[in-house]
Image (cartoon, rainbow, N blue to C red; front, side):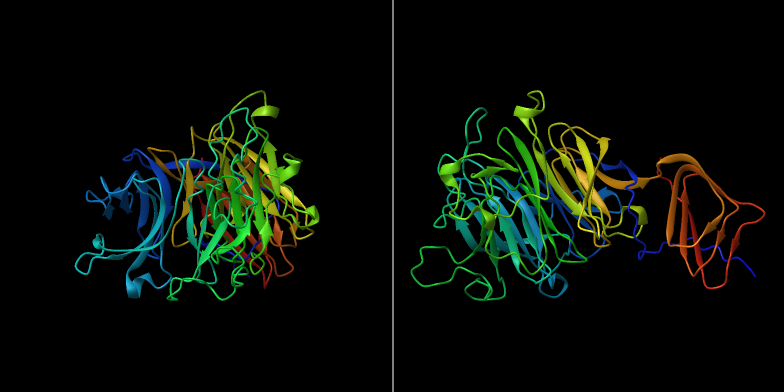
Length: 437
């Protein structure tokens, strides 16, 4: 039988062990990055202060896509309509000069796809702010609706209890919430939003409550599941997970709880069993030797370049530069692996149209790559199940691949198949030389 060696990837394989990861510099031509987005094409859109800039093929275009200098305080996030290629609509959340938080729709220029029509602004929604926690992210979900998170409006000062205005559990306030909009509806409110009873004193855009400062959230592009990084007070940072189709009427617990720790009992709902507790939390200032902590929510990797990274949620801590890979395993348990300190002050994550993962500091943007856990691997014996082997340097093999298995070898420098290596009929073998080091 002739052995077939294919230099491609299989996106169908699942792997339990998390790979090493590294951050590869893409560009350092920025000063205040807070968001990364794509418009379902090859471009990356980078929110930098009060401008949105474009990266194409690793190069930053000299003219910003949108420049709101002197018009707004700063831009928080940008999201592109699912039908952007047809209608040219995109949505910007920004902090206005009067301290209000605003969501506006803009349209791309009719003459230049790399420019926005600044005069096309249509303010869809705004709410007052008091220069406290803002939350700030903006994303389209798998359902086509536009989501945003809001902070509780509190100052977050060290050695305070936080939530001094009581907004997070106050159903009359839009602060400390998840808001959902139907941008294709005249009244902006999806029919599924749960709080739409007349005269209930609950804003119709609210779908979930009990958040402190959910700086970044994301949707798993494959499943539609929601992941939220909610910045803690002094005790715990937390990541929350909600399966697609069950977002409504969630209460994430702040400020009754901070992470999994009971915090302000006077702010607890009557039935605490209804709370949605974080999928993971980690020690903040009070419990980590008085080191500042602030979670930066990330993304579930669904790209094809690094199969070993598939299905892992990558997130970080802004203050320490620590990174983790988190995965929900089929048996319901959680794998949460610390992957090291990769950079100073990671501010945001993003993905491109292919699901490849990016992360930024204020002045630099990086692409995440997955690396082998070993310098050199020797693979022998029979391989009877789908498997992935990843090495920093080389793989040497005399293995037999059988039982209709899909097997991938990935190494930075060399893959050597020696006498005895065999792929039985019906099995598939993939090999790739990866530059990750």
